[in-house]
Length: 346
Image (cartoon, rainbow, N blue to C red; front, side, top):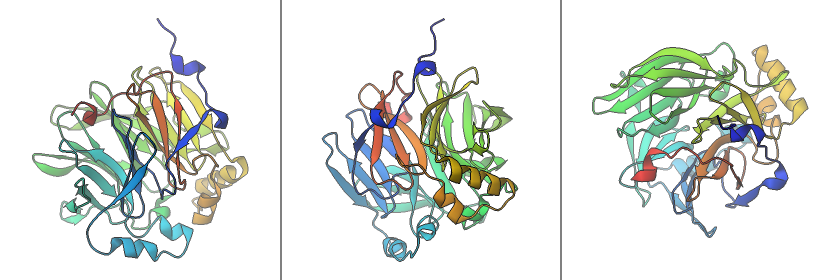
């Protein structure tokens, strides 16, 4: 059997190139085969970056949400109030589904920026902290809600597990799995047999079997039960698959890119850990005493608060790093192509 190429692959700061400038909270990045990128932006929209590096922000056209965001007075508030486009997915018609982490709704944005709310409630109640949206091959939308607590920083606790996964199909929106520690990104494997679920405050990846009707069952931990380094264990945020079956991911605040092999082995690809602040945050978190100040201090320098990895380029071998506090997008060449997302063949 051919040796897994990821096991011999690491990246350092010197291996990185950058694209984009003056971005605000480019947490999620979408790529198309022509090399263009779409990055979520906290100014209330999406930045379209062309292959030549030129960029344009497409601002959502509704309400005064942008003005509300600009009234934020400190860095912690920037991550909890106003419009915060977070996870994104392309629709078949070129529109972009946006999970808005600030306004707690699932939206759809047309190419010209016109935006409509799709869901703001579920089972008659407020939907909660909408984090990520994923479109599958059946044109269904998988939606994650990190917590039902309005200020998500208060959910950074080992004792809070109120996150859930919902599915939107022809029957509407319904909860299909509940009780996660700050549900973050989700991905489906190549055959869409399993869904992989990031539990940020659980510090692990879980997976569940997907039935034909979208029902989920057989929850289990995938890979290590606690990700990161001992003493400074990380908080996973974004995940994505490569074509070999490795599950790539990021650790936010301890700023690491990792891969979990099909055999469950944990491999570090890029490490930008700021050791002392990360250890201080981990200790406070274990004692249920994590604060915004400790979270903001725990950050690397390459892509502060690493949040996602996206494969792009015509051959799907360019890996782009999304972040919550960076202003540009680092990227590098992977030895393995990424697993194409649903929109790749639209």
